[in-house]
Length: 353
Ligand code: NDP
Image (cartoon, rainbow, N blue to C red; front, side, top):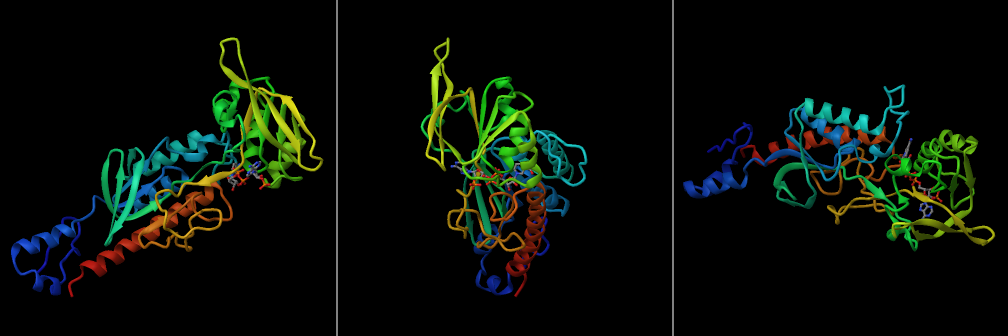
């Protein structure tokens, strides 16, 4: 006896199972229990990894839904000019770049849903993704939820966020033209964003807690050679202080800086603080998956996590080099591996005995 499900000729009840379910009612429930999920693959996250995964899944003929909570593009949206993505010899804005990824994914048939994912569960071979706009099921899920900026967790940071404390130079930098800006951090993001901010002001200080930048040499050198940027190593920000403006609104007015080598502490007047101290992987949906000491999800080279059918790509993954091109590449690998996984599931679960 065979139960064929639309779109899946291989979708058959094993003969052994069919022998047990001899009456029509129980056969019907068996068919329903093995109903085709609403999508082949659900990609959670619409950054470079998620958009590429969506594109590759769709192009491989899989039905794919990309769920994004905020705006497509992820962290790329914060980059003013991407200059190291292969094939783009001229810098391209993160916004434009994300638009191109989206257009390409849509061109091949990827669908998009803008809402947050509340939970992710797997039962038998099917994943259930509960979102703010309904419940969806899929054979495979690609987690590409990325990472969020790491907070300094110092007094004044939370209270003054949006009032001079920012995590995005492209978004908030223009509000501080010719004002005194403090940048905190020593990685690629801090250096990249400091270069952007230096076009807006020459009163720009970059502080880093260690004696040398972590950033790639090319980026670090550019900052060190920029006459509009003052770099202070071995310096940390301990507190951000605000002052009410003429409208009574509290805004950033000063920072308490401490030298880590000498212990010297002093208050310095500043108008804005831009924090670029790395990121925290967004793994809330996969609490029981294997992770590294930094909390990033561990996968094999095929982007397979410790849960069969769950793949992972981009900054949420444990990876030695967080770059757009790496995230996009991982998205492609995850899509390819998900397609193979689905083939295996359909073969093993629904082939006749
Ligand atoms: P990173 O993790 O590379 O760097 C974070 C920096 O913040 C480090 O210098 C770290 O110091 C410092 N830091 C962390 N916590 C604190 C703290 N509590 N107080 C003070 N300083 C702190 O993160 P990025 O966001 O810079 O980069 C993330 C990824 O994105 C990287 O892989 C990077 O290559 C990529 N990227 C690439 C860009 C490009 O190519 N143009 C642009 C932006 C990002 P310490 O060094 O002491 O650990």
